[in-house]
Image 1 (cartoon, one colour):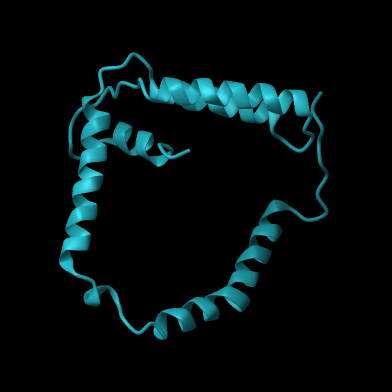
Image 2 (image 1 turned 30 degrees about the vertical axis):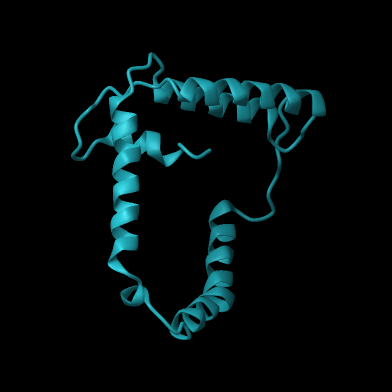
Length: 135
């Protein structure tokens, strides 16, 4: 059974409200924080950045070189179906437990993905797989 929720305001107005709230309350706090930092990125040793770049390149290489049988887009679609079916506004404990078990299966399958594009430049499949790799 699907439940529809009626909104008092259109979605666009809600978004405008969020933007207005951020501009009014958050932006000034973020700017104040950044301006009052004693040190900026230039004060950090370059080796920190080089280590992180190497780590990111290793993550990319690991995904590109995987020889699994799973398609990351198929897993992503199944994830969406599970979340839509079991984890929306109305939640039932047994459905949540079922969804949690299915998510474990998807995580295991993700470790066996195979990227259709193995290039290292402008690889959209790699970007897609990396965007939700930590989920």
